[in-house]
Length: 134
Image (cartoon, rainbow, N blue to C red; front, side, top):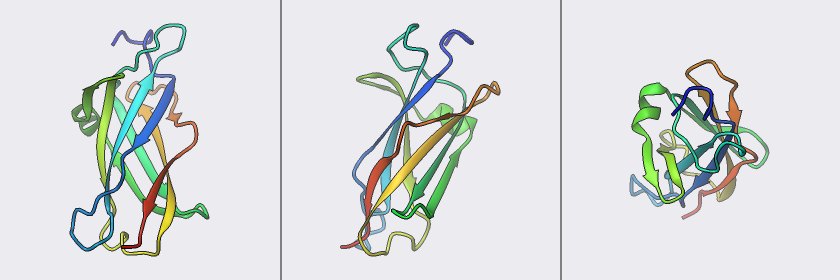
């Protein structure tokens, strides 16, 4: 990535259906793909960038259910070459006991803080994650 020229300006988030990784009958883990895009006039292809990703899962009433933070090393390891272009792939697992609940549709929000102290990016809106129930 050319410093400055291809600096991320937008964040796009996609979430896969949750799975039950601990076999208790409740979904607790889901894959998240994040694409970072430079200015549209420079490129329509996503880019990788060094920095930190923060994810917050919220209940329908806006209460935080769980949070995840991935620093620069984890962000570098998350890099994947995907069909739309470079992306970052993470697996988010709910903290112990947070998966056992009545069914809800939670909202996942993401933000990216560049390592070079550039402005923090937040996704436009949130991705829905269905949790709870058996």
